[in-house]
Each structure stands twice: as C-alpha cells, then as structure tokens.
Image 1 (cartoon, rainbow, N blue to C red):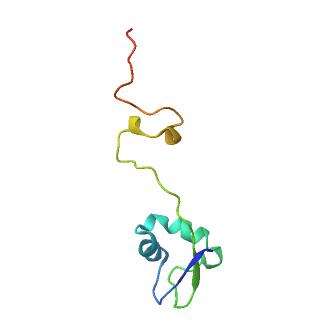
Image 2: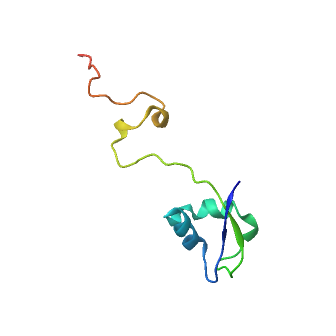
Image 3: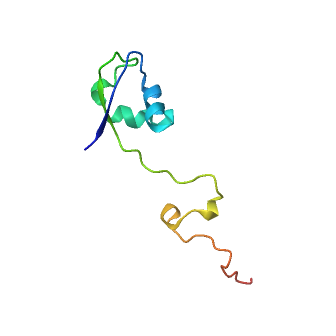
Length: 86
C-alpha cells in the first residue's frame, strides 16, 4: 500500500520532497505521482498526496572504475586483476 502525505498550509513541492526524502531533487517524482495537483505551487491544508517510492541511487562519490557490474554493465576493478604486457 502506498503511503500518503497530508499537506499543511504553505507547503510547496520542494519543501514536501525535502521533508519526505531529505532532498528537494525528488520533487519531480512527487509531482509525477500526483498529477491531479501538478498545477498547485503552494498548497492549502488537507490535500492528500501519494508518496512514491524513490529509486536507489548509485554511490557517485567513488572513481568510475570502482562501479559495480550492474551499474557499468561490465566487470569491476580489482587490484588483483592481471595486466597483460604489450
């Protein structure tokens, strides 16, 4: 069952996204799950919004060669990988 959020007077999409997910970048996901409210910029109290699941993100803080197989479509870097002489 999807969770919901009931707005309070003065809520805005970015504020709701930050409150629910910790980052306003998820505002787009929130709007897409609630098209019937897409034209509202500042909410009055009592609107019931559906809270979507947010896709997990890859950790982008590491170097590209340390990505997982699923992310890169290939094998991961390993310090024990043999290097062929040219």
